[in-house]
Image (cartoon, rainbow, N blue to C red; front, side):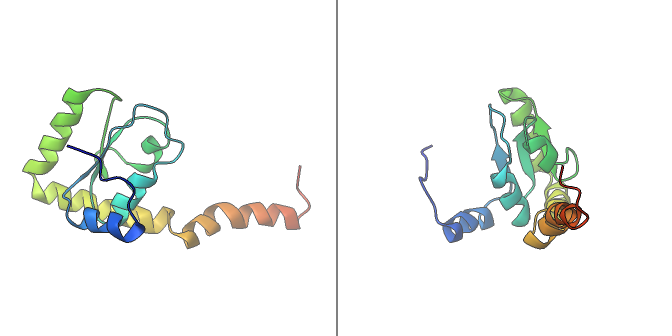
Length: 127
């Protein structure tokens, strides 16, 4: 296996469209797992390391599976489970897509994070 190198946004989503699952086997603390969010936006279940921001993005058993970082056996078991169960892949992919719509669209991010912050500025509570 080799790296595909840098891909444009369109090329990235073309790969997601050809995939059944997305695996994010990070061994360091991801502050934000953009790959996991992109995959969920494409309707894919995600197998991700249970570390950093990935544990906040992927809901274990609902939008995919989390596994201990560096544990190849547990990762393989999760991948095998998803590959063997099309209904589970579909359900998790749909749940991930709905999670992206609820939490990670620009509108959702602005509403959940920025508007409350700006509201404190208007009230004079800056400190």
